[in-house]
Length: 324
Length: 246
Image 1 (spheres, rainbow over the protein chains, first blue to last red):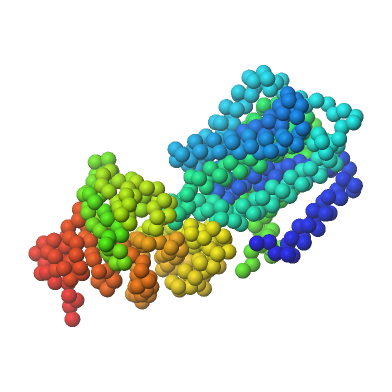
Image 2: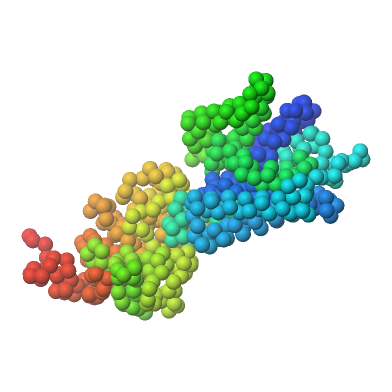
């Protein structure tokens, strides 16, 4: 498992990162918060794709489900946001298990499964667009924060609060993923990823294992969606349930390295600032669309020179990882 | 007493009958061989028994229980482990990790499964390769890995689909010795094999398939002298002897 040296390294790193709000300005904090958010959701998606080998292109469904679960809980029921986090996990996991069970039960594999996930996400987006109770197309708005707001109760606060909250979320999701993939289920996921029929022949209950991957992945994604709702304060079907979100969620793990525990984090560290920089760059020269061109060009270069993501070559260079 | 009993096993693929009404049984503690020319339906039989393919008709009884149509992982849980003729290593994982997956069927802790997997690898002589990637293995080692993965599930019946094919005679003899040892420890083995030298040396009972039907069953002596077997292998009119020319 984890050796003492790497545990000490991680604790030290967390301590340094925790000091962020006293050292950095609000803009950098907000960018780092997004880095933590997309690293978390990347780790979640990676459980399903990188470990269990099941391509989901509709993870916006679970992200949006978590976001709307949190949003509706606060606006309609006025319940503490603390209940929203487990609720978002449960709602996400339920949708994940449902899509997974339907797909895997009828042996929908590979790209066809990916198409199924897109279909479900789009269905959810269209339904929510017409769901008046949740604000429909007009969006759902969280109530404005009152002056006596206490972040630890409402889970909403300034940029420093969200920075800490998402850092903790990332640490928790990372630890959960690390324990899962190093355990029995992790071996089963990788076996299914490599060769499902060969895995079943040596006793791996493939369908159950895949549904579990889908549910856990979706549950963690739901929690990230809930945080997104709290950070944004407003939700629109197109922004949290749309195709664009499904794609944004998966870029970090792909760029960082599929099937690794640090790839999604590294990917988010590269991608999110790049996103912000190219936005500035585009404004500077006031050319609309320049942002996407810069973004696309950098992605192209990474995919071209590090087809397995940037983490594996970096890990080799740093001589870390598995030495046996 | 028979551990595995197959009755009227039939598989029809849209008009083509791959296996037709095959009956045979594998005695508990025995080594039984399934032989026959290419396309005789041997691998299909394996797939039907191990649950990889659903049979059109017939019954598969394992340890006096009906396991017909059971999923592969359930059959494995009951104690049937099989290898694939076209080896299927989990290439993205190390040799040890491959075997750990099998060992995890009976051992729930990863550490215990690793110990057991290592013991299996040592036993079949692949211990030195435990930490190399499964994709880096040469064919003979891949065959051994296939065997190791199956053994790690601690089966009662081991079904081997041509594990000797493509191996040098000394390597094949090495595996044969391992199989004999395992059998002496009480493991029942059903094997598909083309290397007759090995079949003759190992098997107590031989079942011969031809065009999806069983044409002979019995001890090695009886099988090599059976005119129907000789005919299907060499054609009619060949003298009934398989003794090597001095």
